[in-house]
Amino acid sequence: MTLLTHTGRPFERAPYSSEKREQTGAANAHLETIKRVCLIALTSVLALYAVGGIIALKTAAYLSHFSHGWG
Image (tube, rainbow, N blue to C red; front, side, top):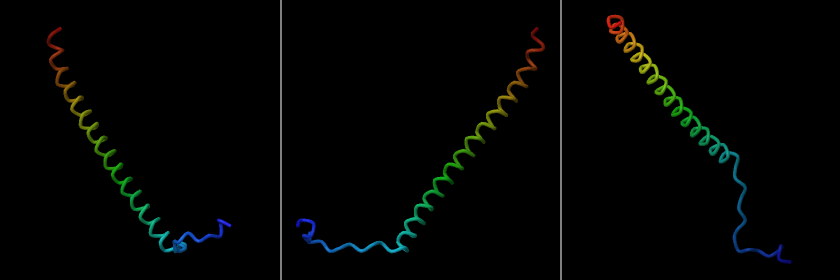
């Protein structure tokens, strides 16, 4: 008999399909923002590695001029 007892709260209505679409749209927007941030971070790291590599190559070329005269 306890299953038939009313709890005092009104019955909740089922969410409409438009509410589900709004939630899905918000989730997709958050996912796109996360993807954009990760892409910017990856691009920045790759650019820093490229600049570091160029500096290392220029330094090696510059120091190689000194090693020829000291032998």
